[in-house]
Image (cartoon, rainbow, N blue to C red; front, side, top):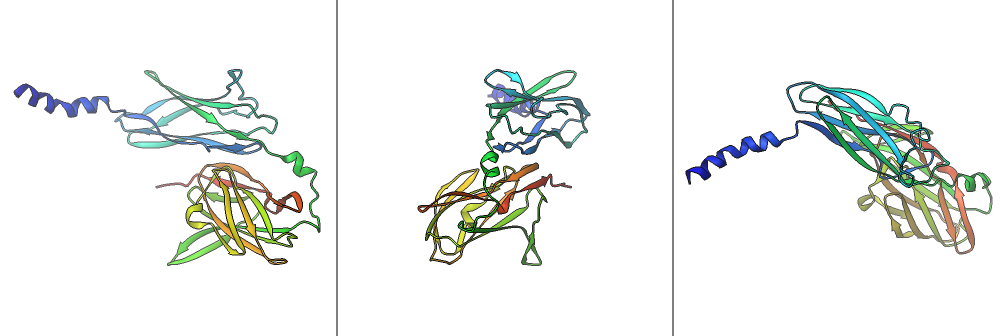
Length: 287
């Protein structure tokens, strides 16, 4: 019994000896990106020791089929960096890349942290979605026979108990954690049933469960995933369909906002580019 009691007294020291004092605290890479996006791949390093933690970080992109580096395709010019994390501090290390339009191979990222005494390695996949820019380029800017789509995106916040809406303009700038309200109006549809395919920027995540709603007309969600919403909508002849949903700005970088696609039984799918622009998301600076 005395031996068991002595071993139990030693356990806290054993656990403490096995505790990791420095490493990666958070990875900030979007679950998917689109061709043309410029994500800022981020890693938060932590140091719980009593000494400075310093070394080099190496970020590399790989074609997983050929197992070859593709850093040149992605303009990964800052793939090797020095770092210093002071005791009891956290620091962000960021690597800007540019997703090429011509590249669609399976891609992985690797991060190595090297110090005088150790090497830490972590990796993951970079899901790249194609951008149908060639199809959009051949689409006329406007056609009187097509429905008309109006799309507004606003940053919403609460001040003094009331909700404030700030309408975002072209190439808008927001910070991580911001809530974005997307409002869509569809008019002049010849059919009383249309299917709306709405995609959002790769740097955002949908907050659909509580926020998706149709304010005029009715709708049914056909598909909802991390990239897009497919919604079947019914509207009376010559009336306006209105719906809204929320997004959360989550990942840092500059991302394309894809156009919506409208289709109905009596017309071919149409690209509506009222939302064709970019959204820049910066890292929120925490105290």
